[in-house]
Amino acid sequence: MDKQKFNSKVLGNSIQTARGHAKLKREELAGMVDISLRTMASIESGDSDISVKKLYEISEVLTTPVAKLLGLEDLAISNSFNNIQEGANVQGINNRHKIEVDRAWQEEVNKRFAFLESLIVSLREENTALRQRLGEN
Picture (cartoon, rainbow, N blue to C red):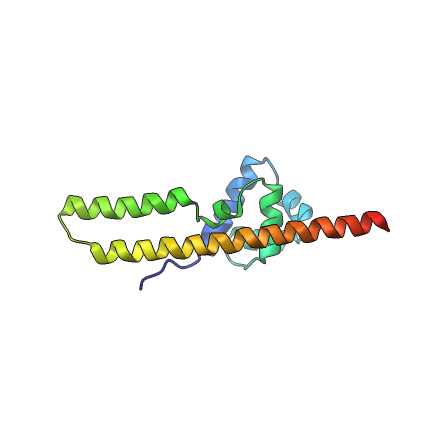
């Protein structure tokens, strides 16, 4: 089955675009999420991996959903599926196999969304607990 692979360049470009919309300099965002300017530049260029925790922190600062930064929005997936189906219809091609692969990919993405959402909830709970402990001391 042909699956879409994670693309760090898409993530980096999404972070850079969202940072621009937030009117933040790269140095400012790097400082807000406690990473070096060099690391931030490397993430934005797609040359460096990023932890889920840092990705979540960046999404919070930029007020942009993690899914959008990853390029995994439901709308984009639906549009991709519809475009493939429409192209097959226009060309008169029975592209049932490709459509089935896209449905399977859409299910996989939905599973990943569910995992990321549960991870976000866990991180928020952990954050709240830590803040409460710090406030008590």
